[in-house]
Image (tube, rainbow, N blue to C red; front, side, top):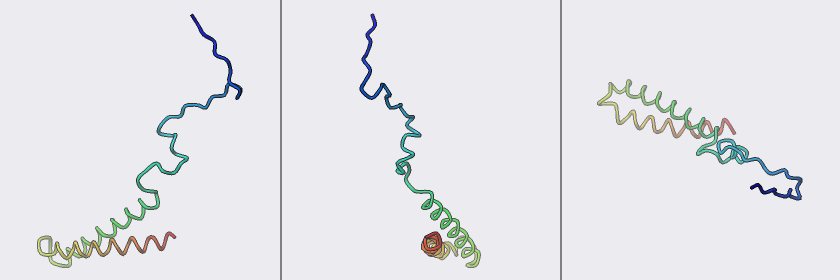
Length: 89
């Protein structure tokens, strides 16, 4: 037993079903961060890690210089975020 469907008024051209991975690409809301934001945060984290390492070495090693190195890294991270945002804009 078969049933024949009539064609729609649009000429029978139904929209194609898209894959979920590629369907939302045109909307722009497909991730947590944009590429620009991810780049800024990644570069800022690398700068902060370098600043923390150098501060730790300058303060005499790991146990004694750890609190100061963390403060220096946090300050470097905040400064790098602001600087990179200004440079990229």
